[in-house]
Image 1 (cartoon, rainbow, N blue to C red):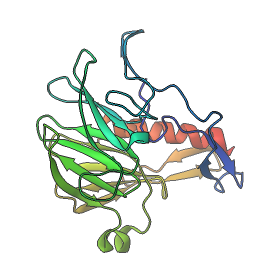
Image 2: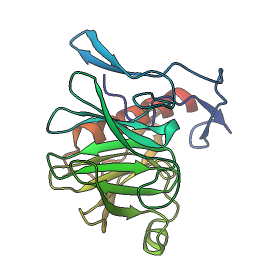
Image 3: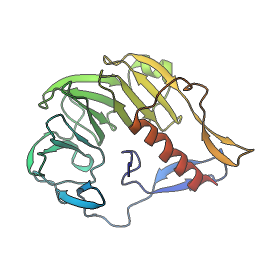
Image 4: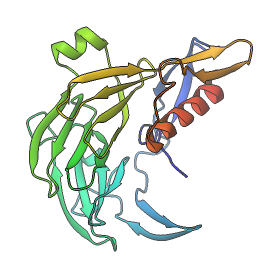
Length: 239
């Protein structure tokens, strides 16, 4: 079952209550430490589990995003350790890159990772409010999308990154939790368009995704998953 990165490992409570008057914030964890691992599922059974809780090589703390590259290597956004860990197709730990910080090559709570063939690796660095690109082997190319830049702030206002997708051409679709919308960027990080928003339909008595702006747009599967799960959360938490 698809589970978007911005929902994995997060507990929410409703503030304000009522349709159209809901906002969310994470609840304090019930335990200080939680066993963390990445399960690789084949069919109905779990084939293997990668990693274990910790800060050492091959260990993970609150991982969120997972991607598989063209060679079958598994990349994990190791959020709590502020890095990306890489395993081979059989689950053997290979290497990692990142570490806490705001400098180039550093992360502050990376929540998602994407690949697109051999074009490279993209990391959603939530704490630093940016999307960073690496080459296929994990060498830094640079920041592609800077959500703190003046251009983005003027055109989009505040953006709260929740999850993202990258297509085969390198075009980026970002889920914005602040405004419940999708923002598209070209491969170089220029804003292309903003699509859709969520609204409460009084007649239907349910939350819906506005299709007026996406009528002729084929949503990638993982972006469609973001929308479906966000609708599920709005319906469950706000009614």
